[in-house]
Length: 113
Length: 115
Image (cartoon, rainbow over the protein chains, first blue to last red):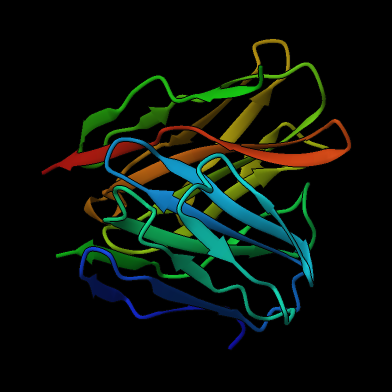
């Protein structure tokens, strides 16, 4: 089945540690996105990539980093510089950057302990 | 500035009653419109979309929405809700601005079904 796979579903991190969230898609989509979701705040864009080897900052990129070395993979690193990393993280992809729907993974819930 | 407003943060409704979830947007350019549903601790799933053509759009699970360009609205409706419709619903707008596509999200509306 085609789709987007995020792993792990739950992740615990100690303060001061970097952590990487995985996102893989086999839909042959060019565009990929990372969103952060906090209660009552909807979705906020962290980073997006319209094509391999290219990515752009979203609205809340500080404390995060990404790479897009392969079309199917768009990992997100939450660094120790992110002040409040506890949240639900969603990865999405779309055929192209605009005018089409996005397909979402099941999310990763990150908790800092 | 472009924005999407979901007018109600929560909508309680009795089972088998009709429901309307409201979405208004602000944009000076042409838009594409989407409604997504999110069940607890899961990702978002597309309910329906408006890209062009008929302004009345039918989606999955018995939902439909109507694009009203003059009122810049895209309200979601269902004639009879079921307990399984309990979820959060997000409206989103895709538009081309300064040669870049942007996808702007509403804050979400929680649909609460009362038995």
